[in-house]
Image 1 (cartoon, protein in one colour):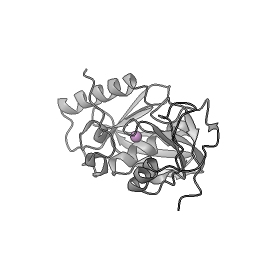
Image 2 (tube, helix red, strand yellow; image 1 turned 60 degrees about the horizontal axis):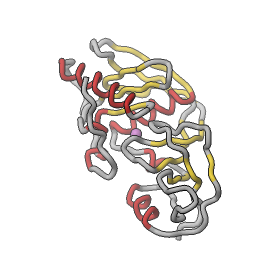
Image 3 (cartoon, rainbow, N blue to C red; image 1 turned 60 degrees about the vertical axis):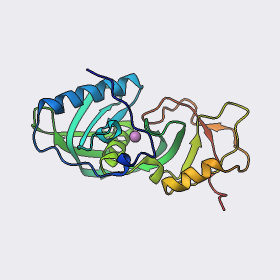
Length: 207
Ligand code: NI
């Protein structure tokens, strides 16, 4: 197995729609193995192939209950709602609160090309939705209703205001100075794909 480089936002590969896998080859097995290793090394909860520069519909998820590999995953059922923190290995230094379905059922193929279904709620559901988004060029910063910076040194950070609707808005917000950061939140929660802790950023006063 080989650790692969994790592509970082705003690399355009993260905005492309990944192609379905049409044939299970040794390359796909190697990709799955490498993705699992790369995710584990980065303490991630999930990883999608575009994050290692491969535009194929392949994801791995590990919510602590073992690795799930899915080829050509497709959400076939979703219900309920949850609102909580997410991060992304491709967007270091940023987390955000994102509303997601509480429950999803996903169908896809396993590494032998056999049809499988995975159903989950809570973190597993969130991780599946996040990773499948990656296959469609969608990032959590597109969906977050509040964003947080995690890379500023404690006590000395430049205040940041952000309202995440689009990546370019996020980029602008993070390069402007704003009003006061309101303490910290989400301590003790693990944002998705990340174990960083978050400082809250006000979300309601962008011009
Ligand atoms: Ni991600």
